[in-house]
Image (cartoon, rainbow, N blue to C red; front, side, top):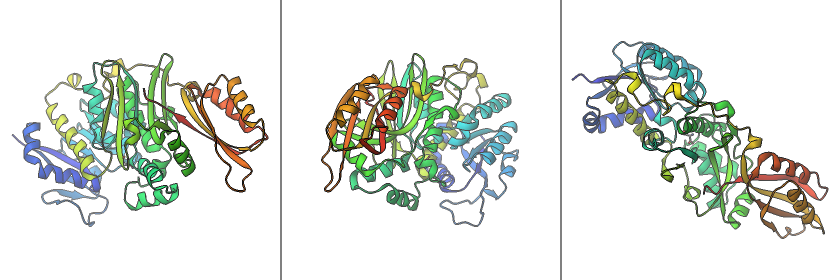
Length: 436
Ligand code: HSE
């Protein structure tokens, strides 16, 4: 049988990984797919750059539209990243009747609903396993393996750069800015590292995971996003004293009123497996009503880990060639006509526990004022610690852990605490999740 002809957009780290993997494991991949998979046409921005792979036998161009318009190509692999050009290329490939495999989380999170509509009209498929958590087959696990479950929540460390920074702050006591510079040097960070540290990249990934878990349209603009730039070494240390680690989590949780979608620094009990995912590794915990909690762990970036997910998608697409479109696994796990309209909760209505840190004058009655305000706002305190003042300092750090409350209650309490004359500087707060 003829080989399946693939067009590759992007010959960078991941593109090179895909070519190497198809070459090294080609025999086993063909035996699994039922046909040989061959990259025959590839586009790269700079044709004269040194490559990590051999491009022998591959027609090269600097114009990616030439690849998506090539009549010989059956599947386009989109690895150029970014949004606008990737969207134009993807839609043109689909409209040309080609299947698309993409690692582009921003494209799927922001334009996935439109991309899937074009794919449906053209009777082709779009696969995007590599868009979330690199090589971990988390989309396949939720979309296929957990299909009998009602998913209650999922929580993930889905940005390796942020996790590397927080791990270094925890283990080595290093400062945020210094570790970020190292992450950039090591090539973990996105081209624009603010996507990593300000939570945009994990918000893209959470959008995709939540749609697949709950059967809702992609709604990136409704994700509450906070980065890790305000996590200080002090907070990492205080959290540790209380038995917690600070992790940058993407959390999607369903309750009777809707679905909360949020990305923010989160205190996790150190006994939680997820709290012990270190360095650039990713992990996603999913709670299904039948299976209970499960954890998926592995490399969330890198040439061959990401290529592993791209090649898995290629094999899936080839295996589904002969299926009628309506018999294929639906893009978002639920059939498009059966997607739900569960509301996304405004952040005020999301409930979570809290860590608060404030600097207070070392004088009688301050703690009583703080605890009275917290109590008036209907918030129950789980722990409160007043630290020794630093030598010569007039203020003392006070740390509170609370039980779960609605965000609006905590907003009210923080506003009133911040207004106390005895409270100096800015109140720090982080959310706390036990994931139990
Ligand atoms: N910059 C991303 C990360 C790469 O650090 O996880 C994979 O999306």
